[in-house]
Length: 137
Image (tube, rainbow, N blue to C red; front, side, top):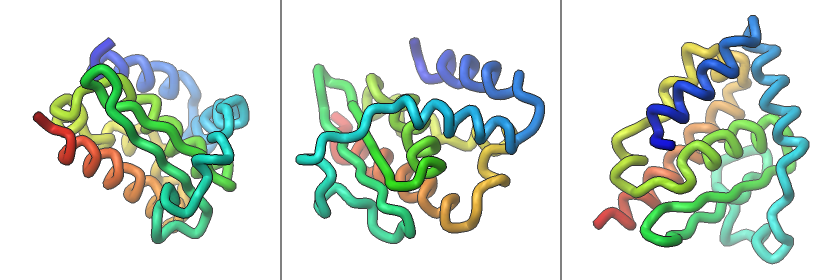
């Protein structure tokens, strides 16, 4: 599934929930089901700086596509970061760089986040984009 198809799928799923606060609750429920990062990966080298919540981010190349994993001590941060990691995992650096996460704003996700959590969202996108730029062929 390409990123445009994934975006359409996520948009349909979240738009079916009538308000932004409830959409965020759906994402938090999914984050509860998300497996934790292995303790060997929950180290300072993988912490995203500048976030109030601890947010660990791990990126790797696998069969010429980017793969991303994350975890946080905040369920909301884990939910938003997990959404982005799942969305972009399995895609080439070029695909990632051509498709920013701005589609989340009209869904009312970002406006229900505190400034600190919006900062975490921006930081995870910076990490995803930076990894893609570094690994672009």
